Image (cartoon, rainbow, N blue to C red; front, side, top):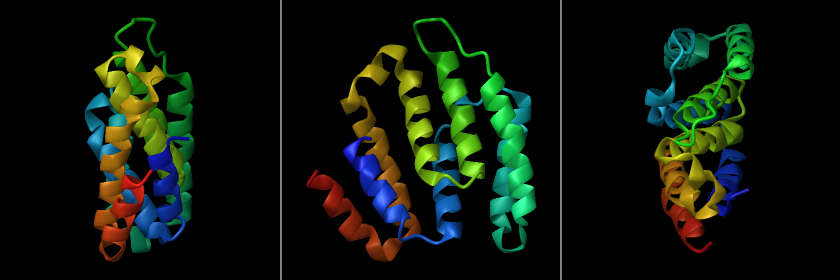
Length: 159
């Protein structure tokens, strides 16, 4: 696990469930353009709507949406091309699936993969490629938890 993703995980352990979902939604919003399938794009909008009314969203609604997304992610064709753009779509779909399932760390990890695959498939083999994406994710998390912003950012810069 990338050191900054470990910092994100530590911070998420201090978050409420709502904050974890908010963070996941922000991560997915950053890679929204990598989603290809119309049903997955619609699922993103459903997730966004559910998060907008989180207090009244039932766990069953999220579970049902997560089940659908897991199915979409597992059946995504991906690509054999070297540029990785279809892999970016697969990773984005998995990221959304993990986000809706409540796994914010995995959602962030898959979102980072999607972002990096968007640059080119070669980049996923270089751990340094993920630094900028995970740092941006850590900053997104700090926006949700403003009282911890300074501590979070300082901690990641010492890694």
